[in-house]
Length: 197
Image 1 (tube, rainbow, N blue to C red):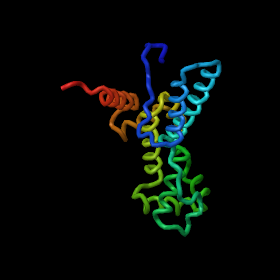
Image 2: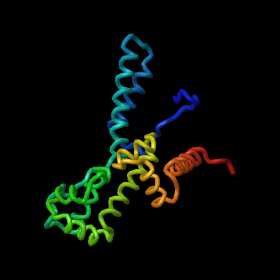
Image 3: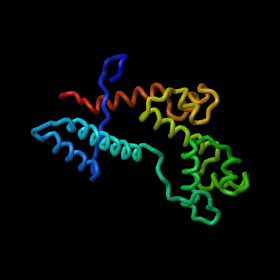
Image 4: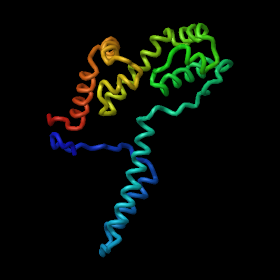
């Protein structure tokens, strides 16, 4: 519950196809249906509820976290174009777009100029714009999925000044980060509570 406005907030777990979660729910149901609630009842129910929430959060984290990549981590010199582009995108995403061309070139064992040309060839974007796209996509995810402040998001994405982050976000998304978050929350609210026709 949010103390400021006394509004109840929920986390909804959709498409719960996890067998472990179903086992925990079935166990909770059996415990609750027991006619005699002895001194261990609360302990059992709390323990299983804790395990259930741990598993739910584990699955939720997998969905919202950065994807685990099967692309090679750094040995891509002789890999296919798809593997090269996947490895580069994964590296940028894992580092929140907070890397320089030189750092990325060092990571993959390329010369800086070669990596710049490779980015242009693979993505039809230079490194600066590729990194900017990654940063803006990550910023959008943070705005939709977290309560991080604009300054926190800006800092996590490697911006020294949040004003630069806001300017870049406006150019990319045609609205401020705050407006983007408000619009998303409004859409979510409307989807959760559709009005009767």
